[in-house]
Image (cartoon, rainbow, N blue to C red; front, side, top):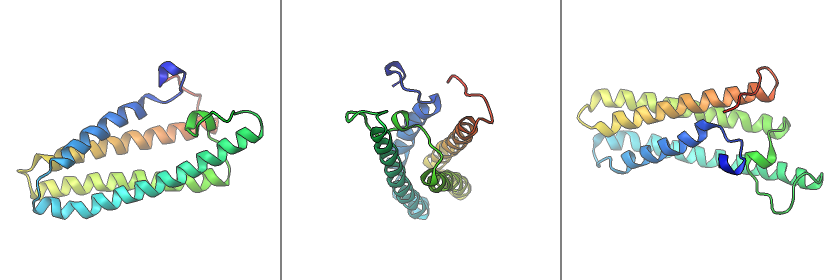
Length: 160
C-alpha cells in the first residue's frame, strides 16, 4: 500500500499480521472448558467489530459521495481512509465512540483472557491470544489517539 502512495500508518499493516496470527491460535484452541468460557465473549467481540465496520463503511461511502459531488474524487475512487480523509462531521462524531468502544472492548477481552489463563495454565492458546489482543488494543488505541490529535492540529503530523 505504501509503495502505491497510500498514507496508511505502519501500525495498521502490523495489525493485519497480528490479527492473522491471533486467528491461527484461536482456530487451534481445542474444545475445552477454557474455550467454552471464552467463546461467547470472543464471538460477541467479533459481532461488535462487524457492526463497527458497517458504520465505518457507511461513513467512508458518505465522504466519498461528498468528494465526488465536489469534483475532488472520480467515479473510480474507492471508499477508504485515503480517498475520504477524516472530515469532522456529525458522522465522525458518531463513529469515533463506536471505534473507541471497540478498542476498549478489545482491551477487556485481553484482560479476560489473562484471567482465564490463570485458571487454565496448561493451554498456551489462552495466553498467546491474550497477548495478541493486548498488543492490538495498545496499538489501535494509541494510533487512533495520535491520528485524532494530528487531524485536530494538536500535534504535528508524523511521517510514518
